[in-house]
Length: 322
Image 1: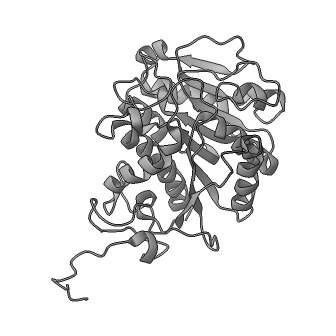
Image 2 (image 1 turned 180 degrees about the vertical axis):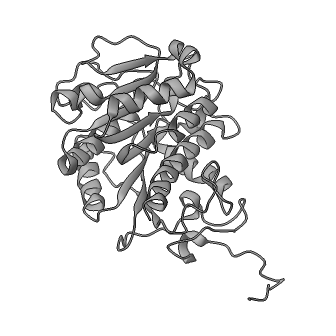
């Protein structure tokens, strides 16, 4: 039994000094802000999952600012530090090694190079065998992420939470957050027959055969009905989950570039995510958190909660497999 030092009751800076596994117990209001206090590291030996920021927002069609999303999500994630993780009920990191890899690097003055720069860095992470959980950035960043995940796993089932279908015409050259789904389907990266979009409440010219659960259907279906539709659609396919924070109603996520009224509540979205543990999740992201339009970190907390749930699903599967 160790003796408590009254002069050092709780350690700080777990992001630099903490162990690879196990929770942290430093004060939520101090210390270096990695995602959930995980160690900042680019040494991926023995690592199960990597959290990675992609601070790009020059593909947005409305309000910019999601380049600051990774910072805001990391800051908000300090709220989850040190306790058994709800709703999972255990320390996610006891047997599940997660690091914060920092942010993607690209030249903001040579934006045409950014997609391949993001893809190349993501390839290096995935080559370690770790699962990648990415923090956007606007929703364009999902395009290079889908691309490199499909290189490893083949065509993917996509589970897509959003107010928008993101299926606008794409010539293969645009940096546009509203076209990545069209490009992914046309290039055979996403299998539309196994893919589903949740929370849609805008019109787009095509659906490419992807199943849609419109926002106005969610009250009738309830969270159990939405979960059932997702599980039936995806089946045993390898799945990539992408969550545009504007899938939530602006009451729950005001800090985003293209808010649309009538979306999911945070509770509904997290309940649905919590029911997807049987999916074969090979990668995930949360995008479009733009803190300049946020209030009291509402949107950042929602984004951090989504990423936390991804890690919880992965850790639970690891725990159940032992």
